[in-house]
Length: 369
Ligand SMILES: *Cc1c(COP(=O)(O)O)cnc(C)c1O
Image (cartoon, rainbow, N blue to C red; front, side, top):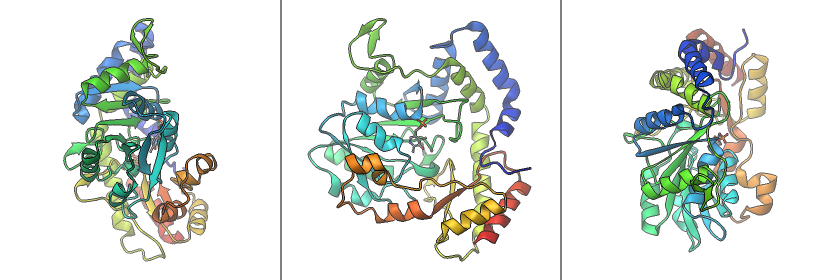
């Protein structure tokens, strides 16, 4: 059997009775948009992360774009973010009309280096968008303290960290607002595109809800610019089924990560590191990401051993052609982010991974180092 990078079929098999029944129910009641499962899921998710509000939304990108729009961030404004993320992070800042200001990463966690944020604040700065990369929440206490001092909004890009914890708080409940993604490969995935936004702010919630529905205050009465950002009822039904065992899945991801860590602790190869998780954090393990000196050779050997790997991400955002042209600051020091982009590599990670499959991956890693 070939080893998958993520095994979604095993997960479906385990949840089949519940998911099939929930999908069937939607097919029969016919409320395919704004059906009862939407509000039901929003309640379940808000309760799970501990926020006052949750809004499901079409995808993780909209889940970040809408809070920026709702907070009034736009032309002439600057938003401070990490240089090292999936492109959607910088993309939404530009879609909102603002300018991303890229900060280098902490080379241990791959998250934004909070010691570099204050120097990047200008009179135009309106928000900070930290990314909880690979499932680990950024240093939110430090970020919130800086934001408070300079009157900035903090919006967490929690696309990879749903379920993670930081000092006892769940991801999506550590800042002014947060957006997560339910893309199938994320820790909590649906069967297509999906996402959710979280906040405790009454006013922001009201505005975001209107933006999600074409900026309408009531039906066919449009008081602001919006989008069509709704999440299909059927995806909400699927996510309700998935939430039934989500805590178990997080435990299993931790089990897989612990076994990898233990097995790799003696590897001494050049540039080799295993993931570092702060003691006050619990990762959602969206990815299990190593670094290695000679990544090309490592990846080739892993491929020959029949183990899929993936690179998140091979290029920092300001080095992407469009972003280089429109947003990059040639003076910015992004040394650690660029090093990471050249040396990170992720291994298969999914809750249903059995020990014998994992042992094959471990043997391949040891052989490839
Ligand atoms: C996946 C991802 C997004 C975007 O989510 P989509 O659901 O694919 O739109 C945004 N930020 C990060 C860090 C991501 O990994």
